[in-house]
Length: 149
Image 1 (cartoon, rainbow, N blue to C red):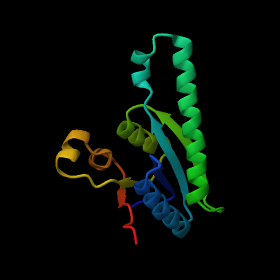
Image 2 (cartoon, rainbow, N blue to C red):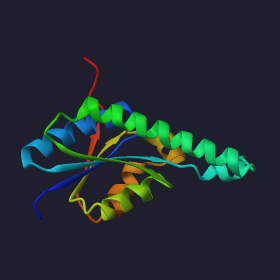
Image 3 (cartoon, rainbow, N blue to C red):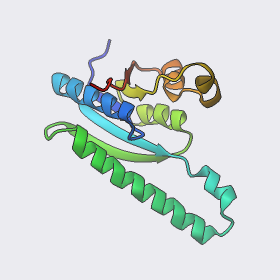
Image 4 (cartoon, one colour):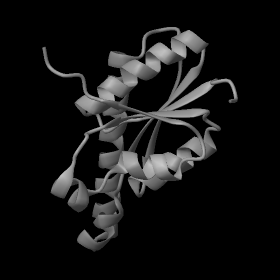
């Protein structure tokens, strides 16, 4: 296996993402690796919802700006000084953007949280983590949220 130099960490700011970020931070420290922290927004539905181009563009800019702010806050909470870190907000289909980000950043591994849905919820909602695992050309580590103590 190729040495791990860059770890892609997708986040939706959930408890599961926090657990994955903490795991990725620990791994990055151990291998002296860099972290690519991303979040994905999907503004495609706004193109149908808002006919006014100016208003739609304002909404998209606002959504991306808020996502960037949340990503910066998340990074401060989970990645200590000394870890090389790059933050990116992407727009599109979540699992496809995660896979594309892995290619674009030449990441060696993906560490992502999983909600662990099963049964009907899994069938109706689908699993981004499962799609990433199935289609990723690089190793994927899935991390579930820590149980409350």
